[in-house]
Length: 80
Picture 1 (tube, rainbow, N blue to C red):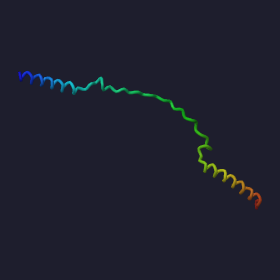
Picture 2 (picture 1 turned 90 degrees about the vertical axis):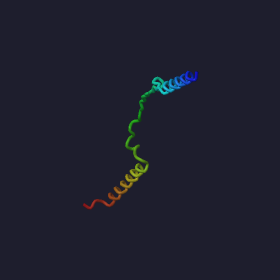
Picture 3 (picture 1 turned 60 degrees about the horizontal axis):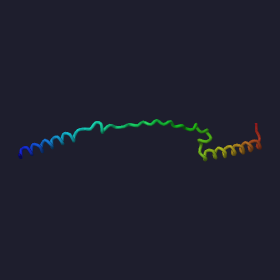
Picture 4 (picture 1 turned 90 degrees about the horizontal axis):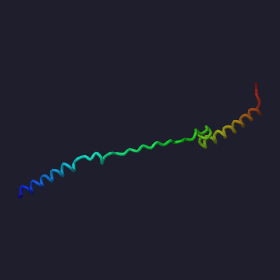
C-alpha cells in the first residue's frame, strides 16, 4: 500500500512539474497597436517674426542712426 501511495504521489508531482513549466503560447501573444497621426504644422514664419525682439529693435535704431548720419552728411556738403 505504501508503494502505491508513493507511486501516486510521484506521478502527481511529476505531471504537475511538467505541465506547469510549459510555455503557454496563446497567453503570451503580444498585441501591437499602431496609430498613425498626421501633424499639421504652420507655414514658416516671415523673416521679421523669426528675429528676436533685440534684433528687431537694433535694426530700427540702426535705420534711425543712418538717417541722422545722412542728414549730417548733406548739411556738411560734398567737397568734390
